[in-house]
Image 1 (cartoon, one colour):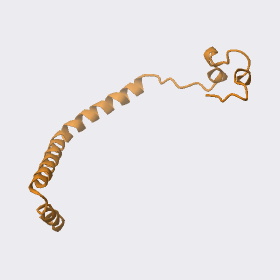
Image 2: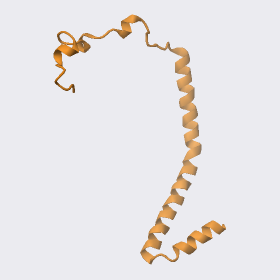
Image 3: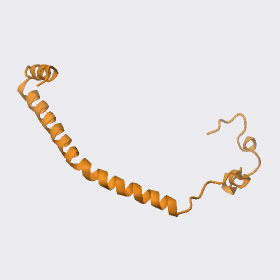
Image 4: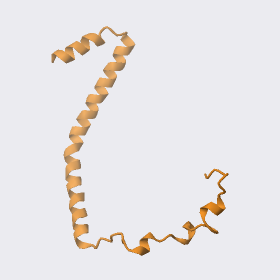
Length: 98
């Protein structure tokens, strides 16, 4: 046992019994979660490698569509145009805009 862990356990031993039990439960749950992760990690690596290969193959065999930078892409759609006139006509200067 390291000095740091021994010091932590000594400090924990001064806690009330209920808090010691809560701390013990939390530590044991964390250790169990670490063991589950260590067991699952090798399996997840295989799945990630397979998914990466599939993604690279899909990218290689399909054509990627890129956003156009032509003037058509910067035009406002009819729904974005002011209903009538400019914004200043719709919002008088004395009225706060939303």
